Image 1 (tube, rainbow, N blue to C red):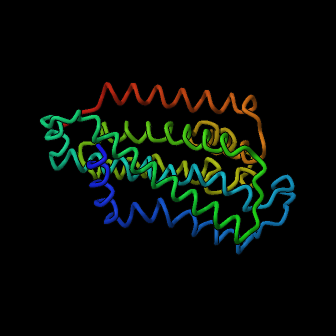
Image 2 (tube, rainbow, N blue to C red):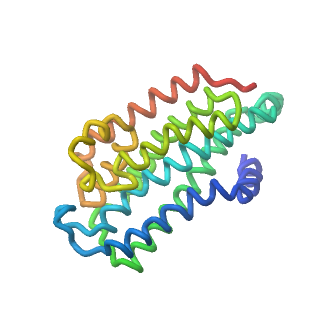
Length: 244
């Protein structure tokens, strides 16, 4: 399995669009927002700095790019080329190949998040007052939930073009209407109901609460929603997934 993962990582290094959205896009966006708004306390953000609000939110933005767009395209491309069908004839369990895809894109997401954190710390003096284990917990749970949606997109897409289109249709509204790309405080009140129906908003809410020093008991609501999303979409994927 390690050999498979290594091979996929080498191939991934040539996917410049996927690398851009997972590693470059969010740091670039953070720098732009930081240059425009800085990180001084803002009354609009309840006395918090713009960078301090956006850094935990960007976890959702990163997962939207990797989990909803890049991952479905990669799996659908493998199906289109007949690779998924050939996986079933290897001694290795075919699910290992899909697991390697998930691990690879999750690792890329983690790298993107680390870069965002480093920029926030060194360039804008952001302050993290929460718990590191809880931050990791929130990041992992959010990734599992969003990736499960991406896997369902991949299972329902006949080819890479359909997967890319479906991923963008699902992903881009979430990026900008869930609080991941633009803080919910900057949105009109009329968008509140729209935001709450988007799975990514619970990822953003969870990560922001952790960043603001919330305890585990305060995270129950968002955690249960994300866990439910992961379970439901994983079951749907298992039922609908096709290897050829």
